[in-house]
Length: 567
Image (tube, rainbow, N blue to C red):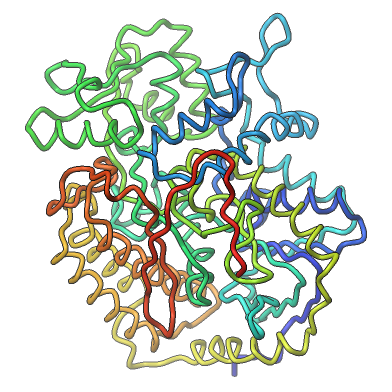
């Protein structure tokens, strides 16, 4: 008999952080520094030493205000790249903190490359070169310096508990053993990353997790908020990354590091034909290939021996598969151009604008619930430093808000959460008549999204009829999943990850159905509305009301005019 109800760990804290990635760690560190009396708890599905997008490291900080550059110029860059659909107040507030975050990281022990004059080595106008293989261990080590930060590793949070109109805690379970967790908190920060795995990936089967975005970020942060009625924004602004073929390694290191240009199979440079922003570059490779001029490449033939060695080292820091491919195949970048391809679409607020609708202080529309990092919408191009900046902003807001916030009752949260724990127990009761495995249901979801909602197989194209079919089929899968059981905790984790992915799929489809234009062609083309339309220069938002997705249109803001809401 399963004993997950009996093995229920109850915990009370002041600040609860869901997700121990870059934003979550920095939020905890900031709150601990500001108020050592606060009890701060991080719940992490993996282990914060090597979790999230920075698990394997990174070789550059892609958001930094270099000399002769300004936060206002960064804002203009983000607005241009996102085709105007951004929150100026959010972008400005984070980019004004980029350099402060970098200084802090260096003090923690991150190696940032410097020239002979002791200045940071820049990579373009907004980037710094770093030795970042150990950036995540550095952040996790910093959390251990504060006695008031407690970390629970290997705990998967499934639901945010709302009592009255306020988020008062969460419920989850251990990935390792038959135990559940109910945590009550005065304030909660969601910082558990964006959504990967909604669509059929480049590499199927055994290699399906060789993808651009962290495969263990399944959209749980979004899904938990969607289910309790939090307002979301710009989910239709998906992200398709342009990557090295097969290894799905970054291409920015080639483009910025050695100036590699995009060329088609005929050797023609096609970049200027489509434009220079992120969406246009992704669209260029897709269009060249669909028009019969593929495959496409980044031209690296002719780089110097020194540049080649720099590339090998850079990829060993963040995507070693690319360096290994060069070595094993003998196709060194100085002698062979690097083939590129688009990934499946992702929902990630760190690169595009998808996520929670928040005020300037990172409060969501649910009282007591805050957001930071990839789950925050309206502020693209935040990358590592922006995610950390938002964690800092959310923590500062909470420290001030808690001065007027009473401690929540653990018993109130527990009474609501126990119903969720009982669902864990129900699912852990074996069933012999289960038709599909959870993996098979996941593949079904990815097939639906790929074919009907603008995946790789559809060349990122979609129309209203296809989206209608996708919505219907995803709803059908959700009903099947209600009766899905698991034989152990690992399988239970897979069931709940799929539940979260399906929740995000439904809201994503609703957003895509509503925006009647093609604003970001590299991320998706609406074949019924193939052009960009200035009449659609507003935010497409949504929230769940009585189990139905309600679409809301919000106007754009300019400069530091803040959006404030009253929850």
